[in-house]
Amino acid sequence: MQQAQIFQIDGTIDGTVAGVDEAGRGPLAGPVVAAAVILDPNRVPDGLDDSKKLTAAARERLEVEIRSVALSFSVAWADRAEIDAINVLAATMLAMRRAIIGLTITPDSVQVDGNRLPDLRFHRYRIDGVAIVGGDASVAAISAASILAKTARDRMMVAMDKLYPHYAFAQHKGYGTEMHRDRLREHGPCAEHRRSFAPVRAAL
Image 1 (cartoon, helix red, strand yellow):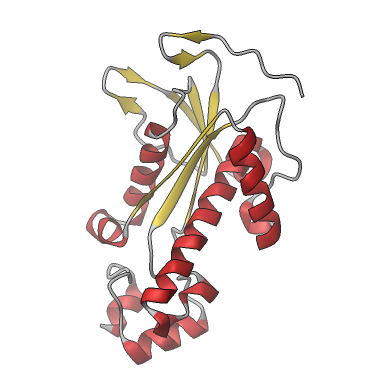
Image 2: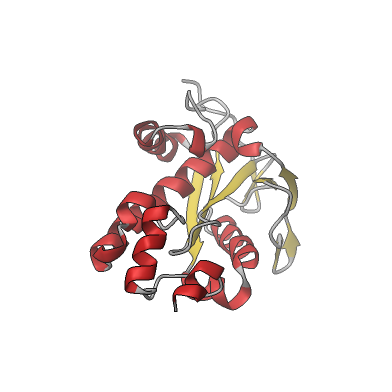
């Protein structure tokens, strides 16, 4: 495929847009993970969509391709302690900001899934941004970020399952399923459960 023509000035890429999305706002345990992706417009992977609409196999296939062809990508997170300290919405914005900072290319603007933007002021400059409701299903770069965030968080929860096998994190990824709530009531919270969430407080 023909490479996109990119014009670089003072460490930034002219006209580049990063898509940003998160995974894990709703679960009772684990981090909230965000990703930022700058796609090459000439090498956009086929089949991009909201990660929740894709099978695990499709997400894993697309993750490999996104990481291979993207101009830049970054994955970051806010952990359980940060979620409890500042609330999950603020932690989500923090994870998104960290993902943007982690890009090796400074974008001119960002497109963020949802109706809120993280703080886009960075030292002496500010990045433009737009929040797009349903962007993870309609904007390719946001879809790509959705997939990277979801696959990264799923791997974290599978690893966490080995540390805390009583809770079956590998199966439900920390979401409040009936199985998870039953295990939470039986064993009480572990170090990765979000104390600021009502079902966890009730199990303390």
